[in-house]
Length: 362
Ligand SMILES: NC(=O)c1ccc[n+]([C@@H]2O[C@H](COP(=O)([O-])OP(=O)(O)OC[C@H]3O[C@@H](n4cnc5c(N)ncnc54)[C@H](O)[C@@H]3O)[C@@H](O)[C@H]2O)c1
Ligand SMILES: N[C@@H](CCO)C(=O)O
Image 1 (cartoon, rainbow, N blue to C red):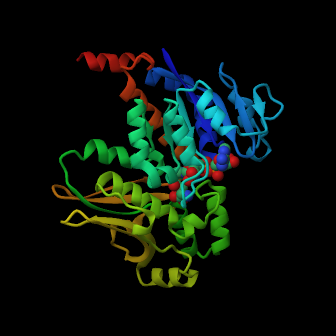
Image 2: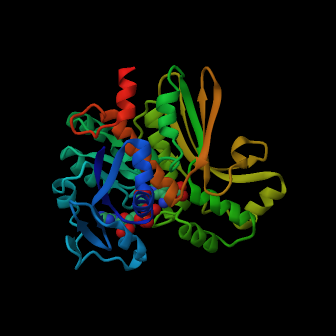
Image 3: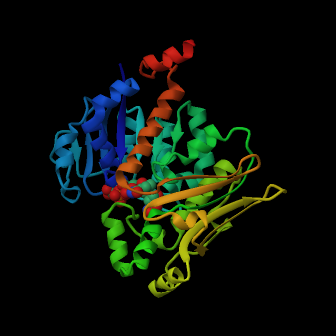
């Protein structure tokens, strides 16, 4: 059985959840998927870096509270994240980028992804910055190096919205998308309706692992702005920049307005949308809307998100599922790794996958 060696860049909620999955369910997954997963490097701004090309023992790291973790003093460890050295020099097959999303210029995640692809390593990421701001260039770089760049978790967490559109909507013309694409703001709006104070609702979303490290991006709509750009670029053939997408968040909506709207059968939702016109141009925006209760998006609660695709042959097709959460987003990374395996199953470097080989023979 083959194996993929992973370098985890950023060891916060999402990459820790991936490490947990590998540590606790690795054997079951290997049997089911036909390949094993091993972590050979971890870097983190706070914990430093840890490298063991024979495979890091994850259990003791996962037993420590994330705030207390320090790799300095461990064999192969350092207080310095050494991101560029780890990404370029440690012999990993896949670099898993899950550091903070920077909506302004995508850095330093954009450099992390570029270094990995330049070094001939596959990349999977949940980081919206590089995908929204430089996705096209990164995909070209990946293609030139013969590696994969996967980012299912950048929109709707583990809910496979990008792959659904890419693989299952063949032959359909998609003319627009509209959806709730931020778990934190949706959770907060629901809690405001229940009478919880804004600051308490934000703290809950942080504790539950939904919010960005700086929740401003969730509240002010910048997170949805990036997701709308990714979706529009992927499914509408657009090439949007941030300034092309009007953006208003939920900070101006008072708890009183939320409850008043609810008493009138309306629900405030932060809605992202993009529409392609006949001349090929694409309009995109993010804004709060008070939706009537019978609107399909009005019934989407908590960290659940939903995106409606407007199509020529099927009318509206809506995909709904978790939009945030550590484990849910770690699943997106696993689905990216599976996609990398499926795409490269015939490469010399890919591990043996009996199921796929069988499928190829048929
Ligand atoms: N949590 C979710 O529900 C979710 C869902 C989809 C996408 N995402 C995205 O996934 C990424 C990770 O999310 P998370 O919830 O794990 O965030 P997090 O804040 O819990 O973890 C991020 C980690 O990255 C580390 N880090 C930051 N800058 C670094 C650097 N330069 N070098 C090394 N490490 C660095 C931090 O120390 C932190 O431990 C973010 O970009 C987020 O937007 C998160
Ligand atoms: N902070 C984001 C994480 C998922 O991208 C959200 O709440 O939707």
